Length: 385
Image 1 (cartoon, helix red, strand yellow):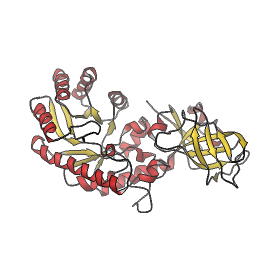
Image 2: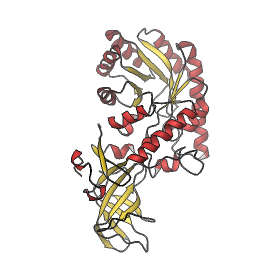
Image 3: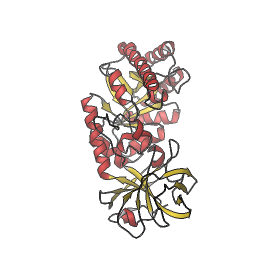
Image 4: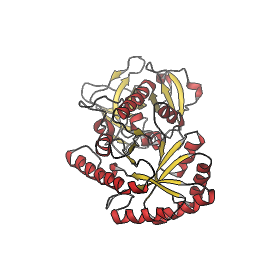
């Protein structure tokens, strides 16, 4: 793997060893501004999911652009965010490890802004014990799930049982409801959109049902990176809507290129893919076939294979579009590329790959080159997975 250290600052991306993950600084800034504008126009807050990048430098840029906090998925991620000065964290999960709950409680007692999800009486009990010992109060969101789905209460009776447990727990405070509509559907086809809307209507109704238990405006937290337009439409006006969309910050060339509300011909503004991986052609043993030094250890493959975007032919400074080429398979350290007739990839050419699903590319890199529009490295972004 490329030794991405501060020593590469000032060098061209095109002279560095591959495989190499690169962040386009201008595209990042565009995405930050575009999402911030969209949230203001739709009167929603943004607490982007930090698991996408686990990069404190990017957390800072998201907060500076108007995010009111950062979302975490695990206590370990909460610890990283706290250590790097994130002032408010929403744990979009249940906090049920007593030791971690005790640590969070001590941090909250010291002024840390924190809320987590609950979906069980046992979970409320664990929080009550930990926060009572620290003399703190746990702000919680009642998670609304779906039968056969992921975590979350399954019905009104289950929600009422958790509400009652919270009512008996002086160190646990209900602030609203939360859920994840992305567990209901994975694309924007009409049936999927209808299922997402139905789920969000249940979430909104649950928020209304707990309003009498909440001191102040009910929080309604939802919104991955595929349906936040539907979230704003359905939940808007029902309380304090907090989106958790995380992938917008880099967008991608695959999954979210096809499914983001902020891409496509009808989008009010379009996000730009900011994360790519460069590889080198190491072999072209037969017509129509080339192999790159990029594999499963370098680029995501869980939501589609990397997408060839451009080529820098060996010995030139002219980056050209690479139309029609396709990655057909990945090994650990090789990408199989089908090359269309009329296109030639030769050994030593450098190929830029778009990725599908940023989360599972970021987690393969501890340091990522941040590049200017002219491909000069301006900084190195550190991740904390």
